[in-house]
Length: 438
Image (cartoon, rainbow, N blue to C red; front, side, top):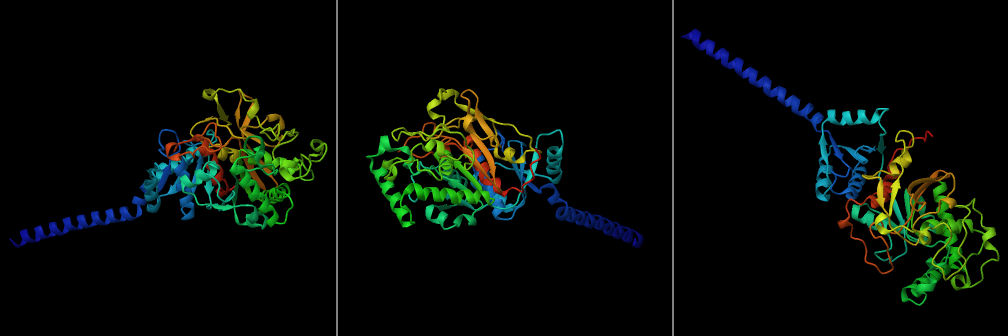
């Protein structure tokens, strides 16, 4: 009886030891192994998997703000983002309606291995910090004035608005990225004279511009706008990132080329333009454009031969432009700026809709073009230590925008390819730059 009791007791102890060891092994596995099975978050950016492409950029910015390690997977599933699996980021994705996938370490490593393969046109770029963003825009700008402001607001990316006073007081050094809203740097008030010179808003805008120029110590708006353009030029040359759309692109370059020449007619600045001013332009001063012919007639709603708006013969249903393909491992910067879930982007118009290839400098990259109409839509270049990107058109989801039109509701266009190009540029300064190999 005693032997039997001892034998049973020994078996109980032995079984308990096995259970204890199993519990301990599970505990060790849970704490040291489980994180290896759910250690990354993938925010896919392909067409089928992502329900809100635009807010995905805001989630990425949020991750950078919170020091969460982030990678931009160029050409992988539409330019996806890979993060460390922080609970706060998962919650943010759910709140913002951004699709995401939980990956094991093995899954994440398999993606990295695929991307690093020489046979794959892909690259992984580390995103280092949340760039501080400035939007150059006048106070009280209307809802329809700026697609970039709408994109930033919808994506929940913070920005600060600055204008001439801040620029001329050297505030640009505080920012990593600068956007130029729909603007006229030539001092000709957007060439709206013929159609709107009696409109109350035009009269008020002109009055305010003249008052601001006087307050800043300039006799003419054209002189004050030139001074602003020169400050922005210095910002880029010193290493800044500048993005511009619509008329802010060509009017900026025209102002630089006409630095020492009066090209404004009396109704704009109160005195005559310089005789023969076309021959006095200095194209070495401009960023992207050269050999352009200025439009002298103040009654014509156009600045120069740079813009292709009046030369377009493209039906709305066929108005698309194609994004160029680049080698992700060799040409990282243009690859970043063209990430999308489609290579075919719906066209849209503006005061400056597209660029005449004959007027684009040879060292400027054409990243998007409409071959049917022979026009460039999306271009990029280097100036000094900095970079600039020019995007033709006014609003990617408002085909023929007109003064007074209601603003675009981006809730209706959460996967807009045209707006994605804007947000690519917003994240561009966050990327750890690699030297261009070609």
